[in-house]
Amino acid sequence: YCRFSLPSLVQVYNFLSGERCFSSLVPAQPVPPLAQTLQGYLRALEPLIPEEELVHTRKNIQKFCGEGGLGPQLQEGLERRARHSNNWISDWWVQWAYLESRQPLPVHSNPAISLPKRDFSDWRGQLVFASKLIAAALDFKNVVDNGRLPVEYMRGQPLCMELFPLLFSSCRIPGRKHDTITHHSRARHITVVRNYQFFQMDVYNSDGSRMTESQIHAQLLRIRAESWKTDKEPMGILTSEHRQTWGQAYSRLLKDKLNKESVRAIEKGLFTLCLDSPVMRVSDDKYSSRMAAQILHGGGTHSNSGNRWFDKTLQFVVGEDGSWGLLYEQATAEGPPIATLLDHILQYCKKPDPKKTPLIPLQMPKKLYFNIDREIKRDIEHAKQNLDILINDLDIRCFNFQRFGKELPKQHNLSPNAFIQVALQLAYYKVHNEVCASCDIASQRMFRGGRTDYIRSPTNQMLKFVLTFDDPSISREAKLELLREAIETYVTLTDQALKGQSIDRHLLGLKLQAIEEGLSVPRLFMDTAYGLATHWKLRTGQVPANTDSVMCFGPLVPDGYAVCYNPQSDHVHFSVTAFNCCEETQAETLAATLHSTLCQLQELLQPTV
Image 1 (cartoon, rainbow, N blue to C red):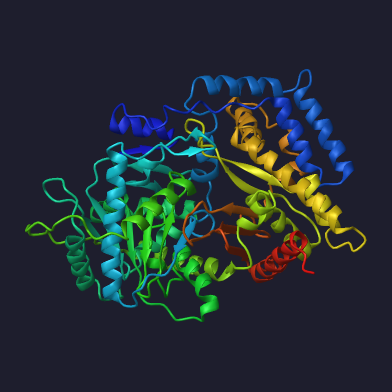
Image 2: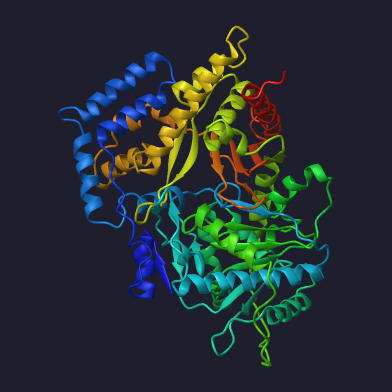
C-alpha cells in the first residue's frame, strides 16, 4: 500500500509492478523555446487587453528574457529538469492543478460522464445491469494487467499508455496543505455503496478467476437486502468538503481503528459502484440535464450525494430508472483513457456472459461500519450544508443539437473541433459583448508521461470574424473567408499543442522553476495581463467518445462557464454549466445562444435560396 505526494505516475506503476513500462514507445516531452512561448503569449493577449496594457507587458517580457533577466536561467533549469525526469512538467502539473488545489472535488474538479439510458426501470434491472458493468470493468482490467491493451495512436504517432493501470485501486487522500495519491496493486474487491452504506465485495474467486455475472448479481442482491434502511449517516459526504476541511476531518476520523479499516477498504478497492435510489421524474427536455447533475454530484444530501466517495479514481453510478454513468478523479485519470474504458464496457455489455458459474459458496460482502462521535457528526453536518449550497449554486443545461454534426464542417474542409470553438466564441460574444480567456484541452500523451496543455482562444483572426459576423455591410464571401482564417489559425494552435509547443504549461513551468530555485516570482507572472489571461471564463472540452455520452464539469472561475461537447456524425451533445451566484452568467442563456449561433453558421455555409 503506497502513498505518493509528488506522483511521477510511470515510476509509481513501475515500482509496483516490476519492469513493465507503458510509455517506452513515445519520446520525452520537449521544453518549448523560450522566445517562441513569449511571442505566443503576446499574441494570445492581443484580443483580450487594450494596447496600452500590451505595451507594459512587452516591457516585462523584454526584461524577463533580456540580459540579466531570469528567463534564460529558468529555461536552462527546465531543460535540465527535462533531462533528469520522466516528464519535466507532469508531476508539477498534477501537484499544482490537483493535489494542492483546496477546492471541493465535486463540480470544481471531478468530471462526470452520463451514458445513454438503459432499458430498465426498477431495482431488479439496476442490479442485473450493474453486474454486467462490474464484469466489463474487470475484463478491461484483465486486458490492461496482461499487456493486451493495444497501443493507441493519434495522427500516426503512438500514445503514452501509463495512466491505464492507475485507473484501478487508486484514490486521492486529503491533506491539510496538499493531498496525496494512493495505489494498491493487489486489490481483489470493489466497494459498493447503497443508501449511504458501504460494502466491501470481493470480485475474484479463491482460484484467482473473476466472478461471473451471476455470482456478482447474487452478491449485489445480498447487499440490497442489507442496506434497505436510509437512516445511516452519509459518510461519503465528507469527501465533498473543501480539501483542508476534509483533511482535518480525515485525521480525526482515522484515529478510530474501525473507521481506519473501513476507509482503507474504500481506498484500496478497484473502483466504487454507486447504486442510486430513485429520483423525482422530470420532463424529457430536462432529463439529460438532471442525469448529468445526478452523476456529477448525486443531486444533493436528500438525494444520492451520500452515495459517493469523491476521492476515488473511478466511480460507476447506476440508477433505478436506467440512468448510469461514471465519475472520475483527475489526479490519476483523464478523458481519453476513460473513453477507452467506457468503449470496452459498452462493447462487452452487448455480449452474453462467457463464463460459467462455478458451484462455489460465496462469502457475504463485508459491511463497512463507522464509529461516529460528536466531532465527526458535526463534520458531516457541515459537509452536508456546504455541498447543498454548492449544488444549488450550479446551473446545468444539456442539449442535443440535431441540425447537423461533425460531417457538415468536414464537407467544407473545416475542422469540426475548430468550427465548434468558433461557434462558442461567437455565442459568448453575443451574450457578453466581449471575448474572454478560453481554454480547450489538448492531450500530451504523444510524450512519455504527458498529461494535457491548453489550446487558447480567442485569436486575432477569431475576434475579427466575431466582430464582423452580424455586420450587414460585410458580404457572405468575406465572412466565409474570415471564418476559414479563424478556423485555420485554431488548427495551427492545435497542431502546435499536440507537438508539445503550446504556451501555458511552459509558462507555469517557468514560474514553478523560479519557486524551486528560491527566487522571487518574476514580474511577468504578477502582471494584471497574466491574471486576465489565466482567468478562464470559458472552459471547454471535447468528449472523445463513439457513443452518445455527455460529459459535465463546473466552471473554473465564479464568473465563467464550462462547455463540454461530443460531436457525432449528424448531431452534437452539449453540456453548459455556470454558477447562479454570478448574475452575469446563465447556462440556459448561453446554451440557447449557442444553439442559434450554430444554426446561423450552418446558414453561412449552406445558404437557403
